[in-house]
Image (cartoon, rainbow, N blue to C red; front, side):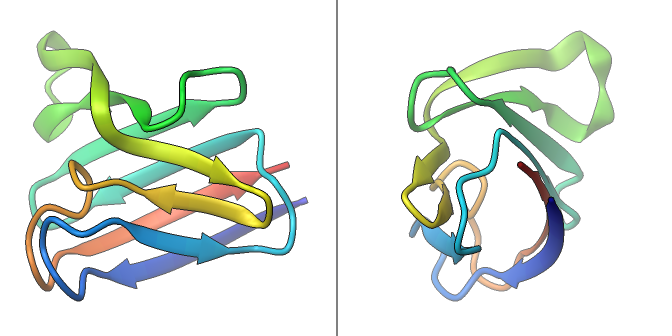
Length: 95
């Protein structure tokens, strides 16, 4: 099972929750405004993600906070991903 979607950040610095009706095992989110991508694999610590800033492979890191958190019906895109009002975040969730 997989689903794709887009969130437009309503208020920068505020996490946004995506309701799928199921819990994903993998999530990829791309903020198209700042060209940063984020990945989360099941088993990672909540509120973290692998962060590739501006598609520069020399800047790959693990976010210690503000990343992705699983919920009982989907996931939350954290404040590092949703950092600026009106940013557009495309995501892919796979179960």
